[in-house]
Length: 124
Image (cartoon, rainbow, N blue to C red; front, side, top):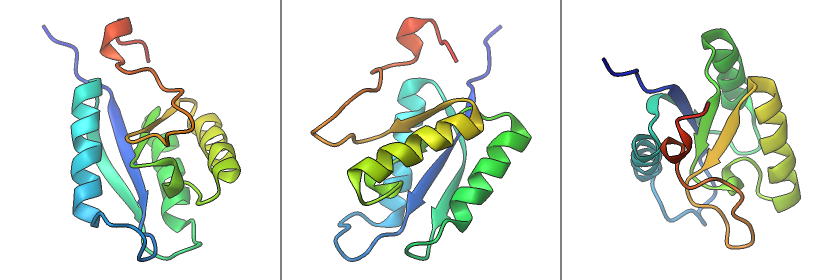
């Protein structure tokens, strides 16, 4: 009998014209990442208006209400365009959901995420 994959949700912020990847490509990348890491991507929250956090607030409420402890984002810039604020946003989100935020494509400056969840016994 196999154990079902832990659920996760995705979050992305539609960005200004500097983003060369369309929304569907970001979602496909998050889904592939989730599968590689042993998660089941259940939903993606999309922030459609710049400098708003309605989708992020809905994501936090959804995670808390459904006991979801993992959030995937395409890059840290989807949390905030400023690196320091992005890190703070990540930490606050992790505290609020009691889990971890996974970055699909970490910036070159930092990569503090374990490569594979399944390698260390599927710890959650």
